[in-house]
Image 1 (tube, rainbow, N blue to C red):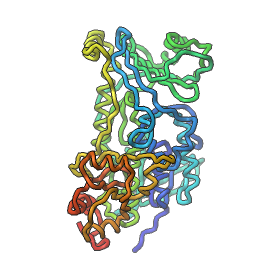
Image 2: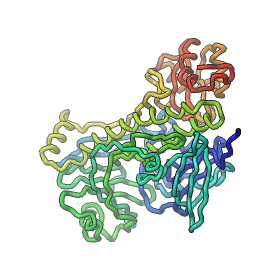
Image 3: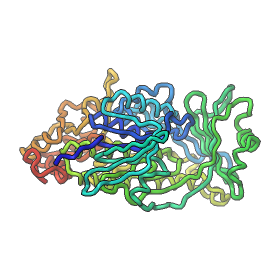
Image 4: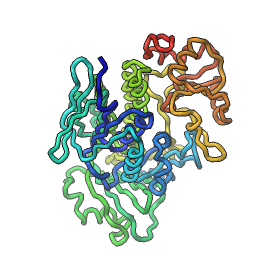
Length: 501
């Protein structure tokens, strides 16, 4: 008997993770119902940084070009030691990087969320339930769907979905529903976060600055549209409530800017966490974003991780909902993403230890080690591969595929399309062809020169690229294509297009 569903996927939460997930799903034609308790976008800044990989996902969503004045490329970062001398430095490469965008961006989160809502409103299969508070998530017996119950102004509604994804933040009803424990890295620290609008000329830096001073570690961030952020670590014995007093704030900021030169946008004390949920899936219910993990802000990767979750999960849900893959494919979501998140959090903790020590002897040792060659250490961003799931042991597997930009400004992802792509030239065998046809793999033989250079540098003839623009595997010989497709074949229905696992 055919099951009746109100929607294919219910997304709970319309922050960046939920907005990206809903947009990508609806762009593929899936029916998406989004539940968001707030009628309007939260107007205050929260996340302020994302990287080139996230901008590439926003490109796929159709919102990258809408952000305009609300984003600015990252100019770099300086880390100063206890004595005020430079100990580490980062400067991004000029222009577009290998993913088609600058290495990183500072941005205004409210503008991003408004752009995602605007884009969702243009997609006919997407519905936004704004102002609805989700009360319960119930998986029906015999794996026949999930019922989401929500209320708005005293009126209750129910929605029956094939799948539910909770992008509902740190205090997640979805995480409570699947009843999972979390691994706590026990790195909690309290910081005062001040967002201000600069209203008079100043000589503030145009790069991010980490003042790694044991007397009080602090951070300065330059944002778009005359906005900046300062973060100050709370010292032992300081009361959170007192730290947001105007006199305290003015005293902390006086080193850089006087009260006549700024307007306060937000002042709040945050506790930085490092947490990962043990389970990200229970049946037809999934976690993504802060509902699945939380990380310190030192790498600026918290929101980035949630967007990567969405990009990883959406195409797998699409294949499963459309009957092109078995539900077992969805198990690879956590397998791939949790390993990546762990590496980011561990690197974040390492950088946090450098930045926020309050022990003078530890800081002195850190500074001496950083400048042991007589000059500051150089920092550079890293791309971490996904964990095992669909990824092979190919050294490029699990990493983003490059995206060159053509001379006329076109992005190569638009050539690849929205599905799988085999980029390069390699022979095929009948079984591989059948599976490629079943999955809609697009063959791109006339690769651009930067892609040809990438293939040559890796000693391969072609690359099999996933819909999320991650390399599934590389191929040199026709026989390699079957090997490259094997991880997917294991999740494809046995009778699909004559192919079997």
